[in-house]
Image 1: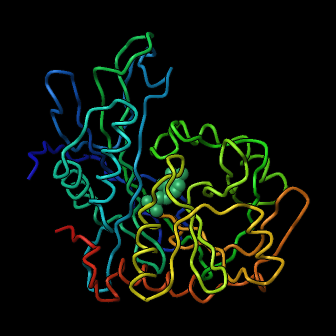
Image 2 (image 1 turned 180 degrees about the horizontal axis):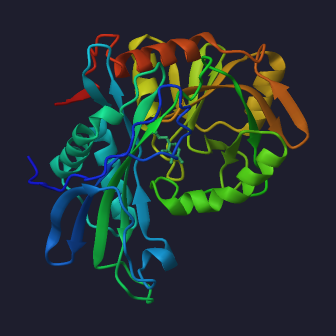
Image 3 (image 1 turned 90 degrees about the horizontal axis):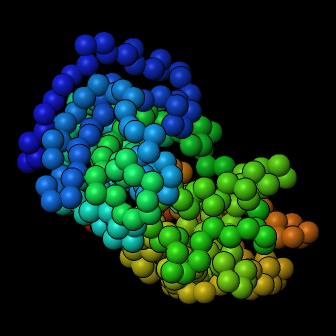
Length: 356
Ligand SMILES: *Cc1c(COP(=O)(O)O)cnc(C)c1O
């Protein structure tokens, strides 16, 4: 177990009221985890301290060249009072890949997972219990050298913060409208697309604003070279059910490898459904929608778990997926994954990790 120095807050905040909608990313718990890194010394001084501002030099590298990475996962409270994490070791594997890509030092698996467990344990009372709610966990690493030259930083901070979040769908699954973006691109193969970095989100803002202005909640990205093949949605991977087959874009270097995506593929295979990870063009999608072969569309990600898509728009064509409602597989995947996360279904795949 990681030896963490603990300084508890002297001024605990009042916990949110039961009926607080807990808007994503707005309320933070009493504590945070921090650990420093120096080249030659490695990671040191792991500590849990009161949630507070961090002090950095204005010249800190993260502010200038964006050497930053993050992760996202959740802790859930079960009916019998246990606290569960969902596949945190997969988040760690992704940290390793992201950090390699952006020249950050690696973190050991136990250090990453123990830091999260210890922080969640201390702020356990903050895990909301209303249906659909959870405690969102945001680990991130920033480059802190006070230096304006361009190179990887020699010093970093690894920080974990927590926020209680409300149900993504307070009234049950609700289909979203998606904008297929043909002007801006998020990532290209060889770039940062498969790394979980803030830079990808910076690149995505312009199209997101455009889609919102047009009344769409999310952007579906096409490949950055031909703008022909479907990649992913905002902070979600995308799946289609076409003629009974589950199809998702193959991880090609510019798509973020989602843990929910992986879990969906594993469940579909377990259920004996045909699953294909391959290239899928927007033309194929439009044809499938026209012919009626397109049976379901859904996004996958930690925030919403499964997000059914009711409408898509590409240039001037708007098309509805079947009756615009929630597909059978979408609902079954949602019920199964959330059932495992909440300890309501037996975790035969060993996906959950208890925080004790
Ligand atoms: C985090 C993220 C996802 C979803 O990944 P999960 O591990 O399923 O939460 C998908 N796309 C992007 C760009 C992401 O940043």
